Structures are given as structure tokens and as C-alpha cells.
Length: 377
Image (cartoon, rainbow, N blue to C red; front, top):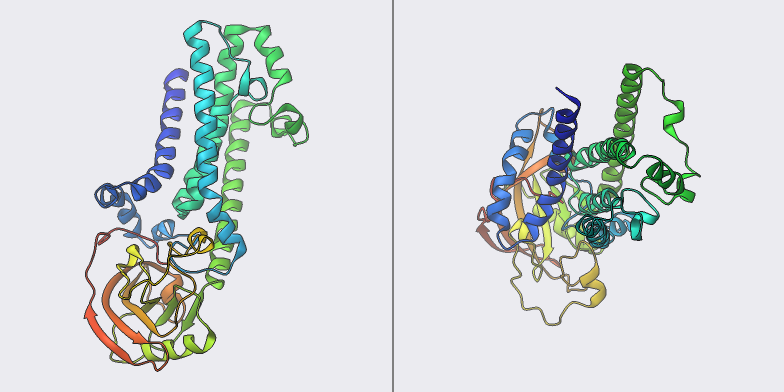
């Protein structure tokens, strides 16, 4: 493989990884989400077929389950602002560089390019970070870290080309600007390049080792974050099934409800409990009681309320009983929930939150997301 074809292959790989990160969120917010996402689900289902790779499809942050973690809630809240800022920076950089090409001005050294040499890569990294937080699978985390490393490689390749084309003027431009951050910020950071071996093959091995080290540290942080998030959820580990409360309820209500859903005659390993007025599309939950008031702005902005009210009467609940899919050996206890890579809806029950009486039972339909790996909390 020649140098040029190798660079093209790397650039193509970068865009494929970037597509993996961004498309899932775009599919989910589009009107054709069920259709597009069913196609996207094919590789995810392939990953779930093996216990060695099934964990890659798991999520780090909550999507429809109330979390008391300020860290998790903040990360979800900043995801969309990051996406919008990244898009804005990308469009500005795009306009500046292509205006320069259209007018024949040569290398761009104004606007964003006056401070950093690769603002478009920075913009794509910001968008990738935002989408990684909003749709936070382990596979997306790996793709994001890999994408960043590829961007660094591509930026260095592009700079070598610019040096050959523009000569000393571009060298002076490099001295007064930073690669991805303003020069004065980058000067405060340690430079890895000064500590790398000079021999090309040894340098390549060292960079590969750095990549795997960064990836291992990132995955370690992701595992810790997922454990922290699960600890922040309202979960009752019962003898028959794990009860997950999607909305914040008091301790007494949790006890009454968890006792009621742990009856032997009920099916499933997981019980998702939501106020009867809540709508959770991922679980097929649709409010069965009239919403008397609109949700307050603070409730709408809460990252895991799905626009539902956080203040409600703890008298009526809708419970989804579901079977959990776990890769590998059979698990017990809380792991029935924490190790679940997917769920199969079985039955809906209407429950009185005061007495624990089951008012109604009905079969659960598969819904739009049947066979598609979706969040489990």
C-alpha cells in the first residue's frame, strides 16, 4: 500500500467511526427512527451474539430512569449544547476554508485559523463528544477515542503536505498557532512527541501503546461511571425480580410496590415501575391517566424525565414486567439488571401504590423497538 492510499484508508476509517457515533442519535431523533434504527441494529445484534462483545452495546448514562447523580445529569444536559457548538464551529471553519479556496487566497490564516490550525477536526471532536454522552454505548466510547487518535494522525499528514506546498510561510504560521488549541494553551501541556523514539518502527509501536493505554483508561472511567449511575437509581433487588423505579418515589411506596411485583405468579426478571401518567416510548409505556397540568420547565429540562412530571400522586403505577437478556452464564440478584444487554416485554400491570393491589393485567406488545438493542435504564 502506498503512502497516499494508506492516508486515504485512514481518512475513510475515521469517517466510518464518526458515522458510527453520530448516526445513532440522528436516527433516534428523526421521524423515521424505527426504520433507520432497525438497519443500524444489525451490527449491534451481531455484537450481542457473543458474550465477549455483548458488553460493547451496554449504556453508561440513564435514558429514561430517574438518576439522583448530578454528574450523570450534567453530562446528559451538556450533550446537546456540545453538539450544537460543534456544528457551529464546523460550519464557520468550513465557510472560511472554502471561501479561501474559491477566492484563490491560498492557505487560510484568518478567523478560527488565526488561532488553531485544525478547527474542523476540533468541531467534529466536540460533536462526537456530545453524541457520545447522549447515546453512551461502550462501542461508541471506543470509536470516539479511536477517532480522536486518527484525527491527530491526519492533522500531521496534512501539515506535512502544507509545508511542502507553502514552505517557510506555513512553518511560521505553525509557530504562532496551535494544532487543536490556541498556542498559549498548548504550551502549557506536555508534548508527547519530544519523548518518542526516533526510529520509525519504534515510534509507531510507542504510539500504538499510547493509544491502548488511553483507551484502557477511558474504558476504566466509563466502567466506573456506569457503576456510579446504577448506584444513583432507585432499584429494589427482590427474590423474584429486580424492581426499577423510573420516577423518584418515597421509601414506603418503593417497599409496597416491590413487595407487590415480587409475587411468584408474575413473569419476568425485571419490573419497570412508572407513574400511570408517564410516557416512556422505549418501554412501550403510555400514560393511562389524564395529565392535569403541564410539566414545569425544570421537569422538562431534567435529562431523564422524558418531559414527564416529577411531581405526581404515588397512588397509581404502570409496571412493565420484562425478561432480561444476559450474555454468558446465568446471573442472579442485582446482576439480572446490571448485566442485561436487552429486554423482552412480557406484561403490563396497573398497580395501586398505597395497597399494592394489582388492578389490571394485560400482555405487552413488542412495539417499534422489537429486536433492536435499546437502553435498559
